[in-house]
Length: 472
Image (cartoon, rainbow, N blue to C red):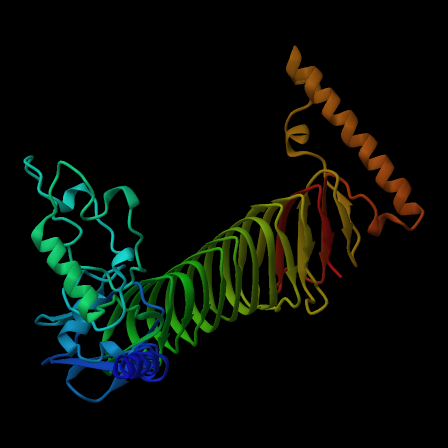
């Protein structure tokens, strides 16, 4: 009895003190997160085109003076997964790199691929899921049973359906391989460990002068070198880059911060775009904030954008809603839009013509630096603030033909037009005599001239209905 009592006590002490230490070390070891890095490189003979497609949290592109392309993937993983080699990790992330004559393709799947690899850890039989497809079924099936299908490392522990436990009374017999797999998992405490998908950084080293083509979704792109030609598409992420010779950029829900660009074609939606000098810009944007230092020429198609430009040489714009602010205008402007506010801070005497067709907007066109200029304005219900005298102009249609030469409805229409113009002229002359005409409701059409038009001068051709125009 004493020996039996002592043995029982020793067994009790074993489970109280020794077993927790042993199994506790396993659990603590399995929960440790380590940083991993895998590399792969290919050798090329000429300056390549680098094509990167995928969905990664961070993609970094750096340049070097070697004739090869090297990619380095950094990520965090559970320490129990360190037995995987580089090829297995690349297969796990679905990351591939293929080299052609003058092109290197790097791509990654949106989700990790399935991988057959046992991992030591902890898994309870109660958490193993079975269904009828894991038992013998006389009907043919093309899909493997869950017990035979490789597991996804991102999968959490799955729950067991109570009505489908192994060993329950059922006409279907359990698959011996499924039971063997479950017993093996229980005996070795194999678990599906979660690899931390966040904090993945893919760094790609490319030869200087390489052309880039990058498509990345739900992640950031960082380019740490000057690039010749590049075609970028970034969605739901950030873009950081330096200088480009030719850039084609498509951004959706993207924040872009770029350097100087020789020529750019930008398609931008619902984001923020900031850049240095862009000599030649073709911009199509919607619902975005655009800000760059300036350039020689800009053609824009804009909707609901807030656009700021420091200096511009020549501007052709089609814009609805939002605003356009330019600090210094050094060239001709051709603008058509609606509900688009325009604010020029300074207009150079070298500007030959500013043509604006707008409505329901505020315009600021300061003429304080101009010594010779001419204004031709047309628009209903517009308030104009000007440092010059507005001369009322009759409608060209009313001056073209006398009323007596017409007949029928056309005669009555022309008569009414002349009457309205005469009333408008009388009203304006009356307001002008009171000294308040310069800032009151302007006539439908007027002209204004300052200086000598025979010399170099600036011509304003404006058509704006229901606007507020400030020339001061």
